[in-house]
Structure formats: C-alpha cells, structure tokens
Amino acid sequence: DHWAQADIEEMAAKGIVSGVTENTFEPERAITRAEFATLIAKALQLTSNSSAGFSDVAQGEWYYTFVNAAANAGIIAGYDGTFRPDDLITREEMAVILGQANAFMEKKAERGGIARFADSAEISDWAYEYVDEAATAGLISGMPDGTFAPHENTTRAQAASVIKRLVEK
Image (tube, rainbow, N blue to C red):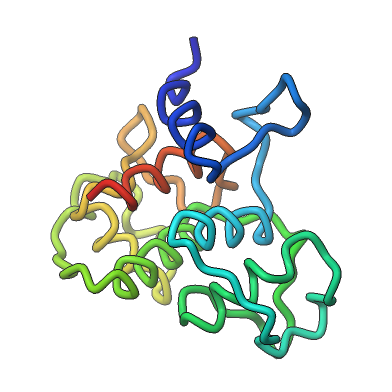
C-alpha cells in the first residue's frame, strides 16, 4: 500500500529498478549516487566501458558501466575528479540529473513550475533552473506539505517514480 507501489512495480517489470533483496524493495531508504546513476542509465539504455575519469569508480564495481555511461552522455557529473558513488543523493541533485537526462532525450525545457514550492528560496543556485524545469515538465512533485525539500535525501520510491515519469513523458 505504498504511494509509489505501482511505479516501483512497473519499473521493476522493465528491469530498471530491483529490490534490495529478492523479497524487499525498501522504498523509504535513501538512494546513493551510484544507484541513481544506474537507474538513469538503465532507463535510457546506456552502458559504457569507457572510463569517465572518476578516480573512485573502479572497473569491476557493479555500477561501473552505468556511471560511466551516464557521465559520458553528459547526464551526471562528479566533483574534482571523483564521483562519490556511495554518497546519498539529495532531491535537488536528483532534479539536476533529471534535467540533464531530459536534455539528452532532446525534450524541450520549460520553466514556471517551481513557483508551487513553498521553499523554492532554499533551492541552491546551481540546481534552481533544473528543479524548475523538472517541476514544469511534471517529472518531480513536491512533498505533501507543499515544499520541495531540496536538501533532503531522495528515497528509492521517489527515484522509481521520477524515472517512470522521465521515460513516459
């Protein structure tokens, strides 16, 4: 009876998301940067064995081909030569990646949807236009209290839902 159950099940059926174990998904668990990059790469059917140059993404890691594919496509970026694969991803970081994925898919970006978030002033400058574009495109929605919660960590359920919207819009 989770709010994202239908989205999670649809993305699992398409092979984009998978459970933490064979029988559990853990929808409210925060998602890492490597996990989110993997979901984006799977959704867009990207893989690459060409290194994007991240010193902390070693060949042989389960996420290697996906992180490099997303980076080589210009969808994700790192920090001074690192990717920080085990760091949790914030909601505003998620929005930036969605915006880059939307551009990669050659979808027109429009703005104006950010006005509905009561905490839009708390969104970092580097993420602001991407949050606006993702909200306007219907890729992201706010929290039940009308905020966006830019600095909160993205959950596995939220990730599955935004990925579903990305591939279906």
